[in-house]
Length: 113
Image (cartoon, rainbow, N blue to C red; front, side, top):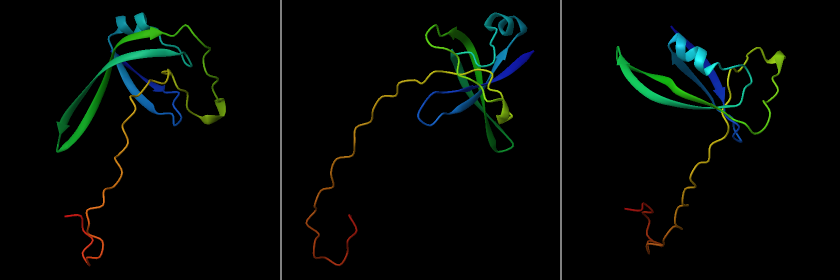
């Protein structure tokens, strides 16, 4: 037996992810409720079938977040999010260095190589 859930992040541009919990004992142990603030640990696996690739996202741990309240749900939206995940910090990328002048000003060919 397995159960699928959808989580939504609290990023500037929220993302949604569907994950699965295998086993009736784990479903009861995790006891995820709609609108609940949780952190999900999961494994991602990919498999090929008929030349196409499919991903599986399987949860192996669920932790309750003690700070904050659950986000309100909009019943008019038509879709209920069964779980939500808080925003995760992402390492900042270093910006590209400024463009260098290769001395090719005046040539008709402006390709960089």
